[in-house]
Amino acid sequence: MLACLMILAMLCTMLPTAALAAEGPSGGEVSVTDATYSVTVDSAITGGSIAVNPASGSAGDTITVSVTPDSGKQLVAGSLQYTPEGGTATGIIDSGSGYSFVLPAADVVVNAQFEDISAATYNIAVAAVPDAIWTVTPD
Image (cartoon, rainbow, N blue to C red; front, top):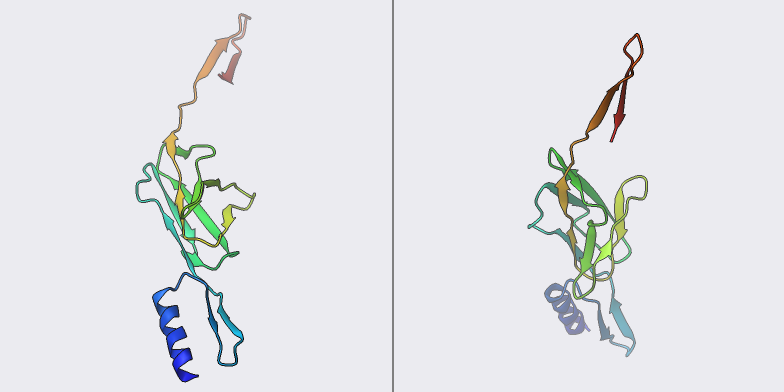
């Protein structure tokens, strides 16, 4: 029995992100399902920074994502995404209280794109009346 537990412990150490099953001493199945998955941010992101909390967790955990654009930049709409290992990208949306997603049963990479904020332009018109009246409206 001790030998089975030692082997199971070694397997858990060697494969920390995989769920393991083994036959127990009485023939029943022993299951280890508390797998931990990593959440990393793509290092190629420019124009701002992305932070995730926590940086690892179990499937079903909520991951909070903080977005900080550089001065003069903004997040490109729809570009904040996570991609599970071997999967397809899924958009991360603002729930009203910030960005977050539910961690799938896989390691994920978070990615985003930033763009320049376009300068606002205004039209200034002077009304043709005895007293000048100014009107400023955004384009």
